[in-house]
Length: 253
Image 1 (cartoon, rainbow, N blue to C red):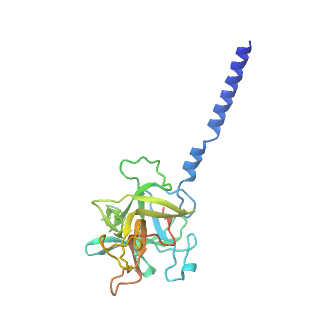
Image 2: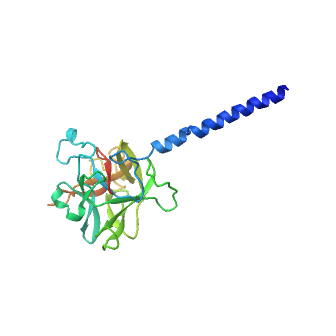
Image 3: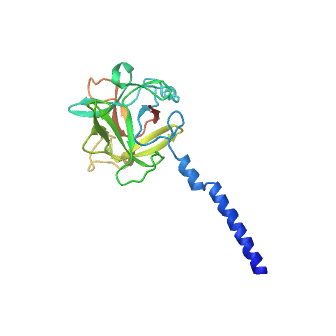
């Protein structure tokens, strides 16, 4: 009698526990959902969906005033051909963007740039959402919005340092890093910055450990060229140490 009663109590408790687990998601389920990267309107960012990627900095303003609010800056990433290669670029003035680089977002607001797509790297499982600290590749249609319009789908190629370009032959794996709510950075790799005892860039042989930096994480950045007479309205993609701000993602229809 006692044994039967004890078993029925255990059965009842097991039933209650199973109902709790069914009705209420586990912490890991909440974490997986909360970890998703959001666009400027608070919707989860998805793979194979068009976005304009905008760096959240007002160029030319003092550093303390340079941070742009959500959705305030409208100039996004696009591409420009130089010496036979297509490079990542963003302009400081909208006059540099053509008609094909002018888009309305899902709310009807006008933005400038070329749509980007995040894709899942080969061999990586995904449910179609982009999350913090996950690998992605990034593509863009060059020369047209699709193959039917004469476009060629190319991928971002970013080394541990140096200029970032597009290629249809290879692609780099980037790591998504949530900077703030609705703001991300993209990690491109790690590198060493070697300097001699005078603080000048040098090779390994002349490097001074106290003046050099080792294992520096590099990010998808935008910066002006340091070449003589270069156009300072053009911000070229570069793998470099992080700037003060990341990027926001503007969804397109």
